Image (cartoon, rainbow over all chains, first blue to last red; front, side, top):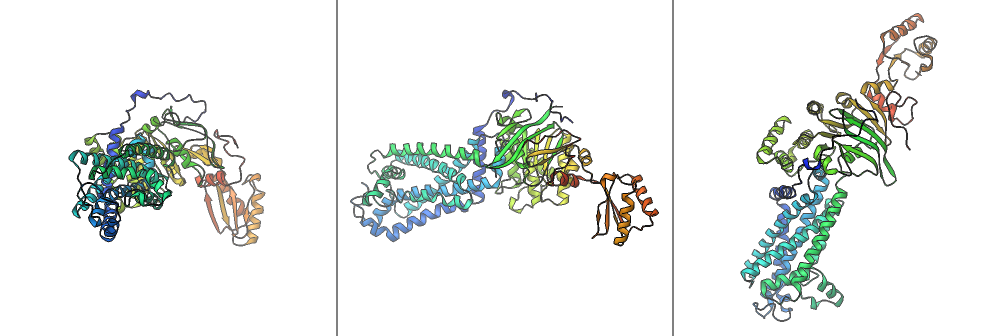
Length: 287
Length: 331
């Protein structure tokens, strides 16, 4: 029994080179697999992220669409009849609905992350030689994929009720790429919110702020129709360039500086979400 | 012997609450050490610092030769932790949980499957392997939790109250698993509130109280610290009790300093003893000669419960840590 304090300093220190290298990519794939398995096993959250925007869409178009469409100034887009009404409003609101769909998936992200933090499995991951980024990347990639599936299904519903985009194949690719980037960004924010929240309940509510942003932007009515103060906010928040870029790609409306702004916001918010999430992950994994 | 765990002057506070106040502990490789202490003594905090979950405020700690603060990844490659809260993925099946761990240990697809199957067998979880965790009992979850920790045999294993809430059969299964691991060379640091568990498993016990190690030694060494051995005698009435107390106090059967505490309500006497037969015989002879009849007699040998209460009971004792080197008070 070696209990003497005079015992020599441990000499068993192994050289760093004999240690297995960190497998960031392999670990991220493993964690992604885990998160996809969760979604398949428990599809409740995923179904919710699709049903809500679809109900929203149907209500806006069929209940309010006639009136709201009549209030739109001039033609919505080159390919859309200038007569206003329901069809015009559907064309106008569709990009906004797609962004609401993406924003809504942040709620699912935050909920699953928060559940993980309280489950204790995250503490186990932290005691293992896994890259921190890989654990979070599993969440982010899984939820980005989920968001893209949700967006695609909502778009299909839109087309089924008469939405007619004029995008070329290249523009379709650009739409897919941009929506993926936005989903990636929003998911990082969702991860941060999920980790910030003290309980799963808070975690599922906090991201509602993101779902409100398309409403306070150019998603549902032109920002020019808003009071001055609100219009100022609406014009400079990230979701307006997101929506305007998607609208431009799908319907051929003028872009202005929106694509550059959209990409800039994506990069900025991703960096913020990533840094926030990693910092919280380090701090909060222990109960 | 090399030290698998070496802790020097470890400190940790949460706000104004000092949890660890200069803890020193060395655990030799290939041994089991139990960390005993009341709730809130800092056992879990110690384990969390050693497993890189919590950063210490002061002092140093090395695990398997790696410093927990400077080389956490080196520590993580060597350790396994099974905590008091089960760290399992409740949305997956038992088998999927094990495969997840195997993949994170980069065993490769084929070896992962083989290892998972082997562990399911070893931990008696084959029937439940493909069932969701919601259907698992507490004992099954604990076993799965430990199995996940053991996907790749750790060199140093931390068990934080591994059998809390388990039924006796599951506890014995858990103990056997720990013994097998140690036989294979794993170092184990175990925290527990069950003294029989420490007695059963650990070669060495460190008692943590108020943020300090207050005693440290083999179970037998610790038991010797505490004069818990006594004979308890009960008499029919108070007269007999008084007579007996008088007879024994003036006899050589007990050392004078020990005294003969009497409990008039229970009509009983407590006579300290080292448990030897000759002391008992002398005692009975003495009472015989005084013509006193004993209603009931029981012999108590000191166990870890006595040690635990004596060391952590609040009032400091003179003999605290006299037979083994312990940490002096730093507060």
